[in-house]
Length: 498
Image 1 (cartoon, helix red, strand yellow):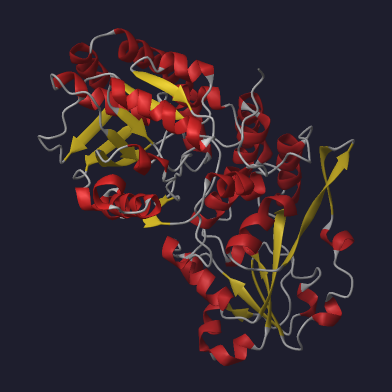
Image 2 (cartoon, one colour; image 1 turned 180 degrees about the horizontal axis):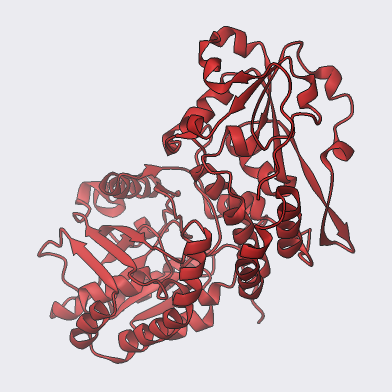
């Protein structure tokens, strides 16, 4: 059931906007309905489900899914209020960061290229959303550059959301109307409330129909600001059907994850590899040259090599160990004791962030065998490489870069704000997690610190560039601190008790 609002007199068809010259649009102010004029689908369920799942947990998400068929029978406004209440009641306002770290990816993937290009033609833009402002402000302001955003405000009590909202008219910025340009254009759909502020200030109204919204998705390279960091466990758009499938899979996924962990840690390599493949755990290696032989297969070798990987999931060293069929050592800054315990294929060594001490730890590990290093210091889901820490370049000249790619259909095995101890369990709950390793050529002597006299920063940048080239990733100078500042509002350091 959809509530249809009264249309203004003299509205225009949306298609006629293409006949207006761009220079005229640049001098105009646009007031647009976000859900109608920018997003391909006007369904609000996936965004609320993401809030329910990530902020409220499995039970709240299940309640939303079960009650959604009944909620749809309500009018549009009541349906929206019901979902706001179900998803936000009892959520702590101070720690709610989904509008910045989870929702932007979902929104951006639903932005229509044609709608986006039309909106960007206007000079001043005013976005109006039926969703709570805390949900839409992150992607509209940070990623699309829209400064003026009007949305309902969530009411709080004692620092917690109570699931009720203020109307848009009660939260208008002072003097906002006086600062609007002379010519104001409005874009909306059949369900848009054109009789409400600020559409009543529009000189021209353009009505969007379903036929007008046969759009393609906005390509990532057209984002005004690249989406590099995002958080959350769900790796799919949580539509009603996809969410139902996820809940049906969940008990099987838990059993499958535990089975994969036991098989991978307790059985010999030659037995565990085919068994894991049978369970759907796929890992592929390519360009594996003959000179990549582990310490155990080189009699008389006194020192191991450093395998330098980009960081995708907490199990990167484990996958490498399975590929090489030998136990390796891996250095890490912060890893849960539970993760270290189940990663029996790899000997984990905790670094201290003290350069001198960490160098000794790595040198000792190399004297006993091969070492895995992920110099980004944290994971990155998108096709970008964070800045490589150069410490590994000083430790040894025997450096072999490895390009790593991981793809998941249901759950992300990394988190910046959730329980990190669950990371290995979550990633192995995916029906068919895909993992790819590409061994690159060993660094030539003239590209190393000791053999070629190259600075450690140059070595780190060279390795980053080679891995980026192999994967088609873009290299950045962003760091672990940058990631956690965006996603969690902290520096990413884990305080441990002594």
